[in-house]
Image (tube, rainbow, N blue to C red; front, side):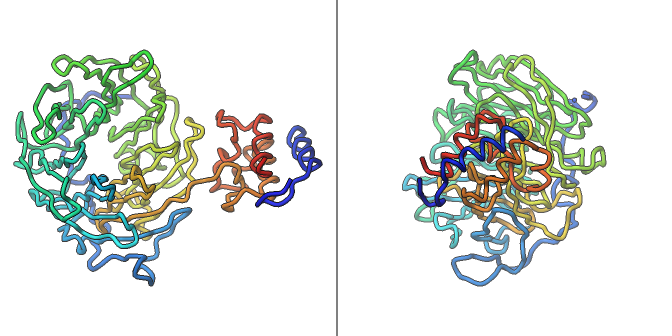
Length: 479
């Protein structure tokens, strides 16, 4: 049996088999707290980068060396390159009707729309001005971009992007009602077609129909307490089929709250769950099978409540009885921030740590498999550098928005099933590592600290057992 991995004989198969076989506190004191802590984001310990960024398409080397693992820097568009004012903020992605890819980069004075179809030569296509503010969030629905900030008078900007390929982004209107014009973050459930404004002074969530995406219509709210960020999903199967469920990070309460918002006029509280050593429940995201939620706390590291960057894990299979089931960490000491789950990997923008990518093969014990450090001079628990990321572009390229440096576009080289020694290929060199993963998981973690043991979980059952041997041999032999 020969293939690109060479010859693996029947005796070798038998040798592999022979060796392998032998061998959670909450506090309601700030439930309605206004969240405008000016310490959050841009703590001033990292200076704003002055000057241009770097594009790999032009050759040469970037002016800063960014430590990384399994990540290639494709381009860096600085704040000066995009006339972004004092700081960067959050980011999102957009694909135009023609299939061209764009980064929507929130900045101090608006949103810069940067074409990244050729990620090695990005082009700033348009800038949408906004009221100056440190915070700015962006989302999209169909061909419209929605922009919010914490600035008084900012509202929600509705921008038509249908003609962005020609450099045209048209501000259609600004929605300022009801209540305060301020909003902390914004989210769109693209399945049901509703927009959600989270926060802004003491607000919970305000809900808008996007039946006419050019003119969001207010349809209801949930005001039990302040909400910092939300994710809302429409269940299409199972016992919750047809339900629109909001997962709410409620700040100083130190909790994840789950609300049925199907009836916008009468939301139903379903479940609430806390976690150990809370500081500030910041943001969460669901696993793709919707069995687990991953939540970052923004003040636990910063305030010295804990020492290592920690992401909390909740079992949310029963929405009325969510359970904290543990946490994970890469052993870093920075503040955790925005995270997203895509294709079995968790992408975290962790401030001065930059982008961290975790393999979620074992949902209760994600393992870091890649990183890109956007601020190599610091590992302190401060609010600087990587604010957000966006891993959902069709190309697979990942966007990183940085407070001081602007926009990075990177290529994350994800682990390969069967590549148990993480050298980039599946070969006979993986046999010893596979046997170690199978027989001594602790020893494997010691010998291969940056290699996810999930690479040995060939049958994807979340366990490394003799049941993976046949699949591993198949990957080796191509048969």
